[in-house]
Each structure stands twice: as C-alpha cells, then as structure tokens.
Length: 394
Image 1 (cartoon, one colour):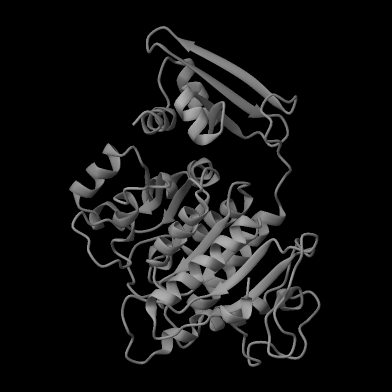
Image 2 (cartoon, helix red, strand yellow):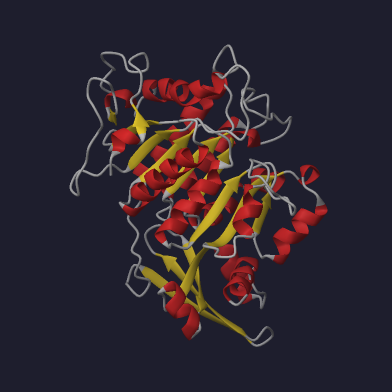
C-alpha cells in the first residue's frame, strides 16, 4: 500500500528533538518529515497504528478542528510509559484531506482495512463520530462480520436518516441491506436524551444497552460487553462537561474522567478488539485539560493491552472449566466456560448448520459474568444469552 499517498507526516512542532526515554514519545515510531514513514514487515508489525483524521459532516468557521489530532498527540507523547515500557506503536500521521470527499473516505477505509487485516489495531483520533460508518465499511470491504460498541450519551439512530452524520450513522449501518454488523452495544447512555421509540428499536433488535447509572453503580458489568466488541467508538461527548469541556456537544452529565479511563482499560484488555476511535473533540480550551484527558484515555487503552493475560481460544483445553446447566423450566441447556487463570466467564450458544457455515464456527461463544451462570442455576435465562440467541436465529 502507498502510505505516502494516504498520510501526511506529523509536524516537527509535535516531535521535539528528544523525549525522556521513559516517555511514550520516545517509544512511538512516528511518520515525520525527517524519519519518513514507519515501514514494517511481517516480523516488525506494530501492535497499534495511530491515525489522525480531520473529517466532519460540517465545516467549522475557524477551521481549528484540523489541529485536534496533533494536539492530542502532543499530550500523549509526553506521558510516561508506567508499567508497560515494552511497547510497539506506530503513528501513521494524518490522513491527507482533499476537496474530494469521496476520495477522502476511500482513503480512510483503505487504511483501516489494511491495518485490521494485518492485526494492527488502528487508533483513530479526531473527526466526528460519523467516521464510525467508514470504520464499518472497512469491515465490509474485508467481508468480515463484527460487533460494534459505542461509549455514548445516546444511540446515534434516526429512523428517517438521509445524509450521514454523527447523530445517525448507526441508522445507516443497521439499514444496510448487506449488513456485516452482528451486534451493537452502547455503554453509558442517558435515558432523558433518548426517545422511547429509539430504545424500543434497540430492544427489538436485541442490542445491548447499559445506562450510565448502572455502570456507575457497578463498573464491572461493562467488562464482558466490551470483551465482545471488535470495533469501539468513543464519543467524548459521553464525558460530563465539567471533566471535558472541549467537545463538540458538551453535556452536564456523563462519565467522570476516571470512569472513562477505566472503560478504555477494559477495551485494551479485550483480545477481540481490532479498532478504536476517539471522536467529537474540540481544541477550544485554554488549559487543554480535555485534550489531556483524551491522551490519558489512549494511555489506559495501551495499559490494558500491555497488561493482558494470555488466554487460550480453545475452550476444550485444560485452561477452562466447563459447566453444563440444564433447566427443565425453560427447556434450554446452557454451557458455560470459566478460565482457570483469568477467572473470566463465557457461555456457548448452539449453531445450526447454516449458521456454522456462515460464521465458520461450531458453537458461538460470548463473554459473560459469573452472575449469568448463577442466574441459570436458578432456572433463569441470562439476558445476554437470550439476546444473542435471538440475533443468531433472527
């Protein structure tokens, strides 16, 4: 792939001559005017590729939004590595933007599909959240089914959506006739911002929705939902305005700064994660605290990734304990797996022959909690199992 036709190098002003050797800036291989593009081969592939994007569905009068990716970089590069010093991160620079919008979109789709196919996790910084639609098209280009998760104050869904924007991109994904999204989940939505008809649609499609208050009460309930996501779209509007003022549509309520960082760490810990985007930032803030928070969100993503415990994908191995639960009351038999090393739980859904061929799997296994197992012992059907089963047989 011709990376030089897709990306612009990072300005020298963001890359000082020398970082402290314990700062991230000294560990990230960045596309710079002097050093060129950080090429890689099969043996030297990075774990992450940072991609700066300046694409919005509207034109900002001051045009200062173009600076967001570089301003976040400046804060990110200055952070210290902490416990994860052995990092392998490339920064591919900023997407080359021209007057041709279709060409710009195709460039990003190509770059994202190239990264994901090579098991490189792209971290998209900047732009509006409608870029999630382009991320979806990258999976579609590869013919790859995926699960989408958004950290959002509301589902970006409008039944009568026409032009794609940050408030309706989800509608276009759902109504795509040749759809490659298997599941959608939203974490941290605020009920008073969502029309009841939209929540009815989410329920009818068996999507997973968790309110902000539920996550605030028990943050750990978000972990299995995040663990099941391939693509994660983080709307910085989901953080309360007192913690993040420099966003495009600030809200008085939302995640606290430490809560959004915890969610990001869960994202990094997930072995399924293969793309991550951070959207709807604005540069209009004197003390840069929101841009610092965005950088710290990415830091926690990296911390989660480099703190991962190795986990086998072979559920028949001795690494897992298997529990089979039969319920005469419901007529369902549910199989659970618990990893002996990590303590994480999973549950299995049977597939018919047609779905085995479609997904290339003998059984469909989704993350869950010990609470789901305990519910099944009481003769109840866990909600996550029920929704997944309905989607599989929809």
